[in-house]
Image (cartoon, rainbow, N blue to C red):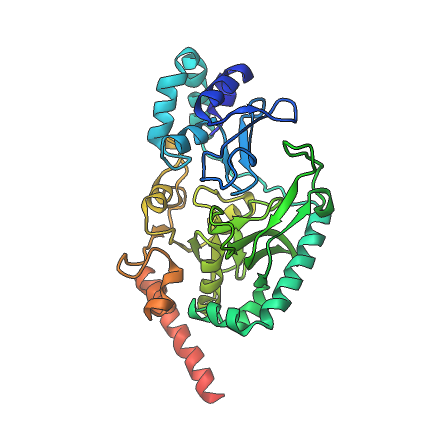
Length: 385
């Protein structure tokens, strides 16, 4: 959120971090603190999470989660990282001396509002290594009938696996930062940091044929503390985009697996799908251009508190500058998977529910009529074939 960076000194941020974090101590790299991760329960505490008071940013090299001091405060107090109530409590507890700066910050945000940023893409050398990894994982999956059957139970066909480059990584491995084109960094033991590639299904996102973001659905029983969907270090936070950019209707979901399923089922209708890959991730400038020109946006974030919160509001300090999917885009509407089925679109196939039927029920009537005609055209073409 940037509040602590704007209204506090680095020394004040370090003092608060030491108060909040468990087993907090100076890291080998000057200026950083190491601690137990506040975002997940570590199997080997204190070896993966680092906080930099100068930049007001912490990151866990185990679970892949990070954030500023307010996000850390929210995690420590049992909230999601961007919880508005946690923000207010942080201000009340730590920002009394910075009230004037805070008011100035609010005034600036009132004038500027929320602005999408141009996403930073990984270096070309990272993309080269990522492409090698994705191609190898895809080839391995195409020869693994058991894993293909698992994906099919989730509704994803072999054709989609081939088209989208979905893969399988059979063993958790580690690759040095510099080997994948990232700047050299040391861990607290003085060794070069490594990128973790967990065992599991590999879901890549591409730009111009090169991977720029990769999540792995972790399937390693020896690493139960990893998040279910682990983002590979060095990935960009661009939104996953599937479908024609000129599509007039888009569906926004959380996980890349769900977006791939939606692409498979809805692209014949000319519908695009986007995955944020993390509920608090915001549209980059590229995605913003696509969404601004869309006729309709179905916001299908998970059917839970975090999904609802991010559909309707984000930044808590100023009503007019908050980001929310349904307030940012006038043509957006929240559409849920019924709780009796699950919490996201990926639960539909297992319940025997047609993805197209679920989608049709959530679009405006005039768009539904258009898509129903398109369905009839597709069926007619198939019958003639």
